[in-house]
Length: 129
Image (cartoon, rainbow, N blue to C red; front, top):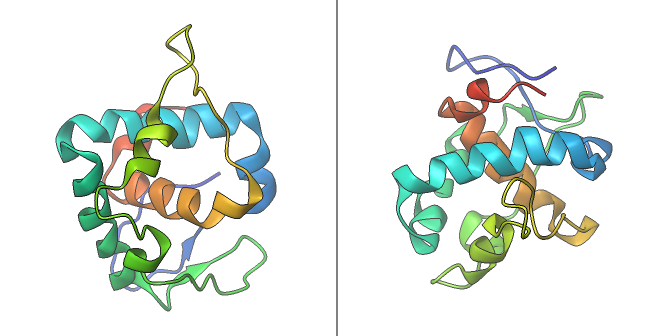
């Protein structure tokens, strides 16, 4: 479905709303890769800093139907400097293998950016859907 990015000039496909709403895809392609990246990133506040790198790809981001994906600046999308929302996003259910919460439509753009960052940096390749 979505592959790692290989060159600087390619179009990059972001997840559609129905992808994010799919619980299995959310768990396997968004939440698990982000949790794996969290050890490397180190803190919720650091996520906010690294996600700014997504802005380097502006103009190359498209939905599957080829509409451009335009997002707010990362610092506006994640206004809390400590990024406490990221802690809620990464929290596991009591079973430990699934997210405690799933995204609501109001947070889909945040989730898109997190998935994209994880995919661009290779974590998603370790998690087949």
